[in-house]
Length: 295
Image (cartoon, rainbow, N blue to C red; front, side, top):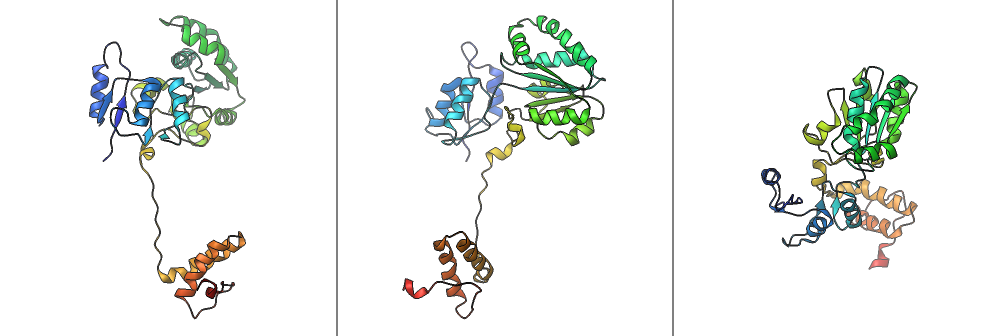
């Protein structure tokens, strides 16, 4: 049976009771009040439970991400996580203040969390640049968002929506939000992203908190070849083969031929010995080794 260990850092003297309840109803067998590198090490090596983990998943800071990277191979992990990334594609129909607020909402993830705006409207881009400092300054704790925007924020002006799609796929961002006309076109043409948020009514913050899609997503352009955490990460695919004697007539002959093309005589002879045994009266269109050398 699966054995699930959940770790969450305490806030004050204990875990938040709502978090503990959520972990319990989600099926955790053990809940530990710890976070950070120590939580990763505890789960990987089975401390307190005697059950070393097979796979470690979930978010964390830069130290957690590095611990998971170092232990990958000894255990499975979900993704190599970097700082949160958010990209917005917006055209002239987008409201600048909503674009700016959504960018700022993602800036506050961390000092090094990049946010990018791709637009084919210079007027929109310039307006967003103008109001971003005001939106950031209005936060109760603006320092993190200010650092993110000043050091990692970008506004990219593109010629048309085809260029927007092309640049998006080059960035391959963790989160991509589209505030533009013809959302179906973007759904059909955007290829690289961790999770896609379509329309003004669908802010990335909903994905962070409530909308339901898994939010452990690829960063650092890993969206070019990988999606986010999903149920497939917890399913191990096993394969097996079983051949009849008759099937060896085709499979064995081809395997023998391919093996000799590759210079792997031992592999070829493993096929040959079966062909000689199962079809002693038949002649195949390639040379079978002299079985007497093995008797």
